[in-house]
Length: 234
Image (cartoon, rainbow, N blue to C red; front, side, top):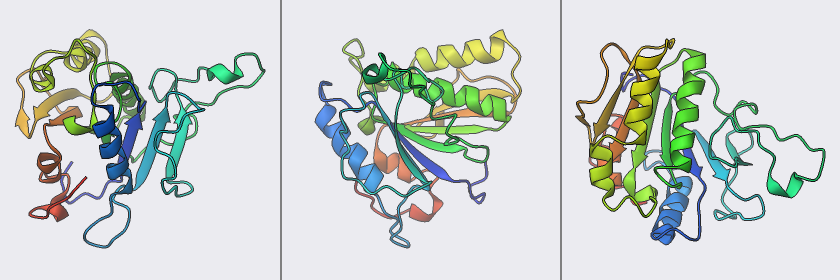
């Protein structure tokens, strides 16, 4: 995607928790990203914002601005956007649960997603995987940006930077998807702070996974051309 091409930017925060080691920082950064306004025009920074809730009775964002049709808080038991599993409070009822994808939140034309909040190697990975598969169905490229300060990891990931620079769930999944079966939209590439990792595939990169070790590096990337040289506090 050329940076001159105007594609809607979507923020997705998955399964914020009160139990992760760095949960307070992740919640603070998540709220900061949600409330972020453009220094250029003062408007909300993201065209769309989504909070994927783990528990419908607990809202860890709470009292944030919600724009009808542009923002959404919705339950997904796994973190996947196409998960229609009933919330636990409805298990004894005849309710049907509609997934985020079924609500049309991830529509054709929505290509750039900033992901955070969830466990990086579990529920957030489920969000990413579902995005890849939804965009495969749309036959559109995907640009997924993940800033590490907005993510927590399970206890088995002791070094998040080392985790993202080495083979992990994300790279294994992408390799299996593109090498193991036919897909509609080409290959993939993975970068860390803009530097290409060697475990991408040949061909046009239909899936672009961009890890950032800081918000500063993310906002200095070509995805935010109007912000270069501007200090953005999250």
